[in-house]
Image (cartoon, one colour):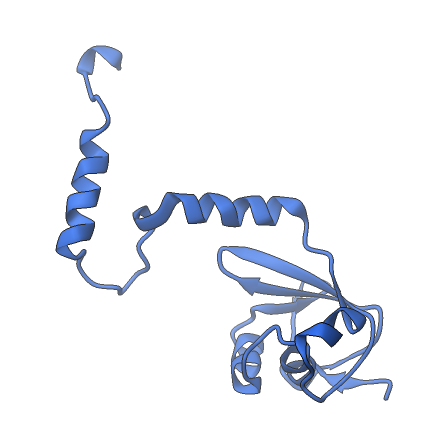
Length: 132
């Protein structure tokens, strides 16, 4: 096997839970090879670097071996190498720390608890006009 579809490979190495989700990610332009968005039917080869955007960070994986069959998590390191830069993980940590401040669009109004937390957070700052 010298080529395999990218959506099958992403599913096989457990980057996405289902092949449908992997295909959708490709269609939405979240999977890149050489900074170019790829279609789900794109064949990949050993040695290529695949970038997967899972907001807020972009993961990078080097293809070590090919498979179109889903495998156990213990076998995954033999098929790919995670080459994601450390600054991406720092970005993920900062986003996790920020917590509720970054609300996703369309998630509706804040709950009563979220509103109270937000008010407490805002009240913790001292907005004296003499500081400006």
